[in-house]
Amino acid sequence: MNQNHLAIICMQLQLGSPKEMATRVYGSRGGSFMWRVNTEKESYAIKQLASVIDLKSEKIIAKYELSETIAYRFAQKGIPAVSALDCSGKHLLIVENTGYLVYSWVDGYTLGRNEISEIHATKIAEIIAKLHSINMNDPEIPPPRVDLHSSETIIEAIDRALALKLPFAQKLKENQNFILSMNKHYLAITPLLLEDTVVTHGDLDQLNVLWDKNEQPILIDWESVRKMNSTREIVRTSLAWSGSGTENFSFSLYAQMLRTYTQSGGVLNVKHLNAALYSLVGSMVNWMLYNIELACTSDVSSTRDTAIDEVNGAVRAMMQLEILIPELLKIV
Image 1: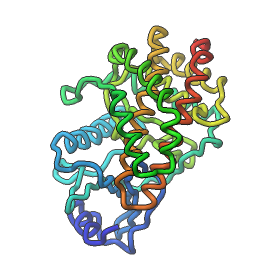
Image 2: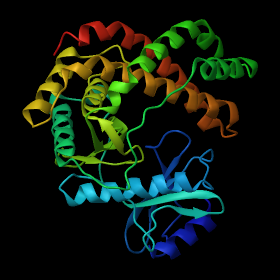
Image 3: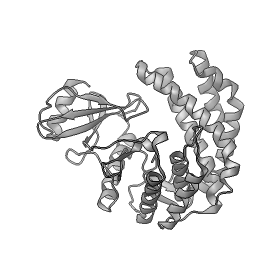
């Protein structure tokens, strides 16, 4: 981590003097980095935002500020949420065109895909039901949105990857018609995703949940906070915690999470199930395109390698989802 930046951050937030160099820790994706800093006062986690993020955009800055504010408000209502520290009401610190979010350090661990138990998964379902029941309403929160990408945009990204001879490019080209077909199905159901929306975390996969020594979950990384169709969130989160995208997908765990959600007060709209399942395609396409861009432009080898893995993973997950959807629709 840039030591001059660290000194400025410590001064602005009055964190105290660092005891040693910042240590990079695992836990962030999309070109961002996470650092641990120990000062004379306490320990902190510093998230360094990806260089591709346009920090000159007032809209993007406002989005980061709002997401941390919403995380704080949920914490006040009993949700185990972690929000960034603020300096005179501002959470996002920009130092020489680099963005940082600073958090008090939380002792905890994330679960690997093969470490998830029914107890872990059902606790997540319970928290989602509680998030939805709070039904937070704030005029600052923008209307619900969905990620929309045209066939032309997808083809252009694939052709760019081919021109640069990226490792995944040929596989993408071979599966181009499949990707376009899945995206077409997704675009057709997007109007349903704008109904029954609630303010929620928006991205509760395993990397965004820490577990403390008492096996209790702590929700981190609220950058995706938004108004979202409630059925969409519980379906996509249940799929993620049940092994979607891997060879070990558990139908029983998926079904148990949905049951726990409804038993905890969540409302599952069966009319939105198909749309909720295909909404994952929109997320996969969006993530695929973002990482194609990273792989094409990043000059950091570790970021580029991670982006390549993420693109391959998105395509695998999309293929598995196509197979799973008919069976998943039978569960409810």
